[in-house]
Amino acid sequence: DRTNRCGRATERRYAMKSEVEERAMFVSFCIEQYAKAKKMSTEDVVNLFEHYGITEHFCEFYDVLHTHGHN
Image 1 (cartoon, rainbow, N blue to C red):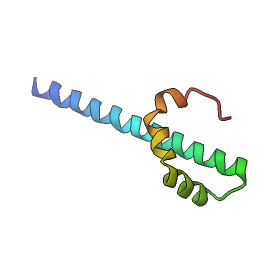
Image 2: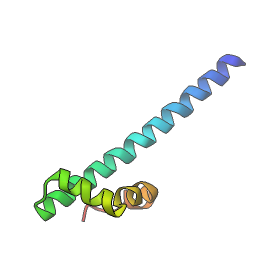
Image 3: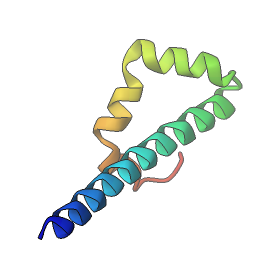
Image 4: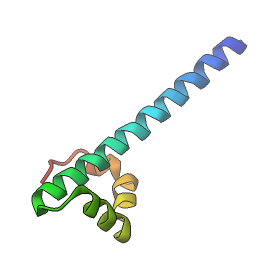
């Protein structure tokens, strides 16, 4: 039974890591797309997004936002 619990805990950690990685990749994609569209450096976009809380918004509403196109 202990082996089962450890296996389930590992699966949950893997799923959580996977979700965090997916969100990070999504935010990175958004930063790159915005930088490209506005002809800005990615560093400037990161600073802009952080200043206005956009990064947190993307993470909070990832479930809805990632299903939309890049525009």
